[in-house]
Length: 462
Image (cartoon, rainbow, N blue to C red; front, side, top):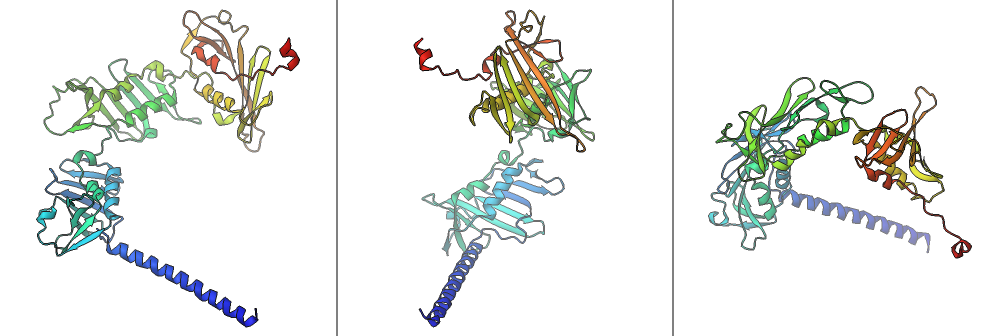
């Protein structure tokens, strides 16, 4: 090919490439223009809607919701004053602001037949600049493939996805925040709980590497157990709200039958009072300390709180350590010894040598040791078989050194004896502690075991 032809081909390819990208850009711009022209809602500041109002023929009550910028939340202002469910409000706004017109009916005539005069649902959005947009939603089409929509004073009826109509057609309960208490778990400094059994009072003590929880009057609580309890309180959800016709005496609030009180950092309290049962249903009345509506909760959700006792919340962990600090593990049973080490963040069995999956047992055991709690304090170590333990677990921990110093290495041991006949618990002892603890008997059964050695053909014949 001559140089002249090469130049012509290069120019041809350059022009073709330019035309391809130009065509692609034109197509994208055309699609964007079409999408923009088919938007249902046009606001000057659509990302900052300040309020919404839902009313119409199919709405039993007009619903008004306003945004609280400082509190970063939505509040329902009508027909009741309550915090709104931010997630549900967000879904509604996303459906409307991203909604598209799928078809148009020009010169539709009477709007009544479309459910648009008066409108089945009327949605009004106002942004923080004061710009306002109104969307009317009517009936479903005969095939139910579309829903009818329009704007006040418009000269056409739009066809939209039927799911959009459902996204806006919401009840007061659906848009209302159903969380019984709104608080941040790590901002709770004190907890009082009374569910009809043993009243409990706990305080969080700051200082050291991690905050600790203690029982009022003395005794350390298990931080994880207390935080789990707080998350259960945080997760309480109302099944219903009673804003009117409230009779506190008949609902078991005079006096209340229990309650939960949270002391918050910086002062202030939040909590609930527990009332009586709902007649004929597995539900119960509750009310916030601050007053407001009476809420209905599942009895089962409160039953979980009833399981909180001083014993269940007390610090009973045998081996307290950070799992990430564990670097080695050994299990000795008579003459058999299994050794594991963490290499590159992964557990491997070093004695006897194992494959890449052999270390999984060590990872699981380290997790179990971190969660291991005693169930009862037993008697004499000799009687419990701990003078000649059936198994000894040694855990090696490594903490990084400070100011360039070498890492600090410490070991923790757990000896396992016999199962106590009286209690049915497995006797155990931690190095440096003379007490004998009773564990769930199946803990021994879950310890890793080495695979049996393969017999030679000669040994098999014997």
